[in-house]
Image (cartoon, rainbow, N blue to C red; front, side, top):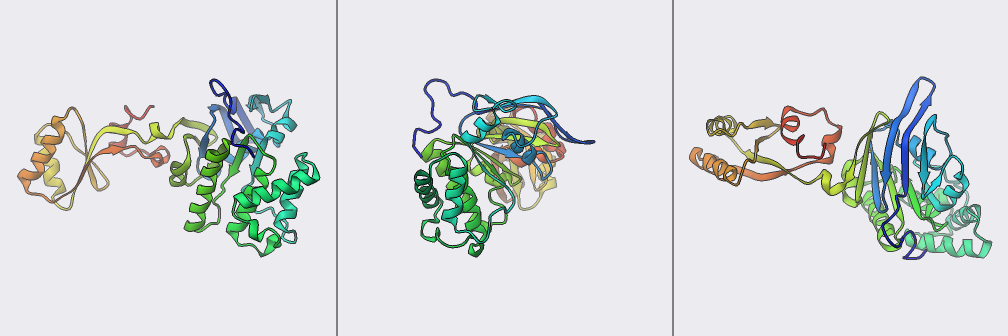
Length: 324
């Protein structure tokens, strides 16, 4: 694996492009008219279970044919160059699929051979991949003796062994405790940083995606909900959030009297920031009422809001500034 792998001179080409991609299973629509572009880097593919993430990954690998539409991976049309796509792509499946009575080094070596690498090179790359995921000292143990976290690392190692330009990781933190999830996310981030490999991470855990991804693609019910950079999802809005320990209704009334039209949202009062004077008005209102101010800050968008039924405050105050 080389640091230059996946890096190109000039403007980067998209690693995935889909156009009106649709997949039906009988009367069930798994993907519907999905048009998107995935740029190099680490991209989060987020959505609830059943949103179509795993179906999309299998179509990207040429393992499932689409009902209609087109898809290209690393510049190759999947419909006509599926084998080429798979030779350039590493895949970490969601479910446990490892043989329990085989050592990690034998299994990862075998997967290297399956990708077309010669016997000696496959052994060398297997050792390198297992070292990278932290299993080098345990590589001769049978996989059946591994913990869940170690098994997930074996799946990541076999995805890396073919020296891919793109990794497709389907729920890579499944079944892991908080420490295991954090370690897996660190590994994924290092893969992108150290080797320049583009990564697509499918997950329903939005907080994890925010930690490591450059871009995010959100799908819901097989449809594209939004695609943008993480920073644009979480940028500051023109909304000021105020939280007091007591006297919320009194403060709301006072802010209304001052023409700020606050909206109650969970434990917060939200007001639109018309100018710098808004901060002064809120501060003066809290001081005049002698209320204990817990927090006052410019609100930031949360990725989780994409998948919630918008509360009046979120709908009224964030829609104009979150890129919709």
